[in-house]
Image (cartoon, rainbow, N blue to C red; front, top):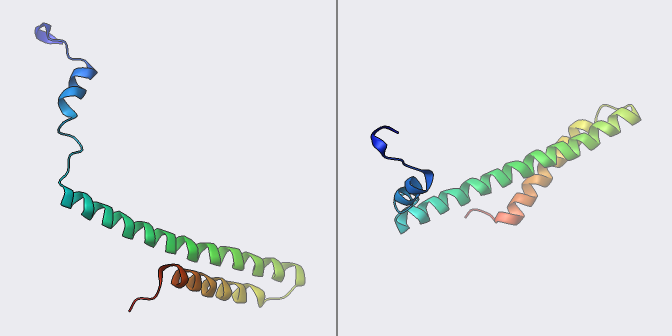
Amino acid sequence: MSGGTEVNAATISARLTPVMGTKRSSEESAGAQRSGNTDDGMVALSYILAGLILYGGLGWLGDHFLHTSWMLPVGLIVGLATSVYVIIKRYGRVE
């Protein structure tokens, strides 16, 4: 660097460490609360998608091998209903 001053990564890290990543406790709890709500929503979405894919796939396989056309819609409906049941069972009802 110019001026004969050499700055290395350790010096920069030592200066920034006390400042970076410090939050007030109220900000930490609010951030953790928001993260938990987001995680719960993603879990619920994954349950719905998994139920639709699993039971819809089973219905599609049944339709394909048995040469019918009603098992896929039934599989999708059963998968969605099962997913909603699991979500309600896990997270409880909203009162």
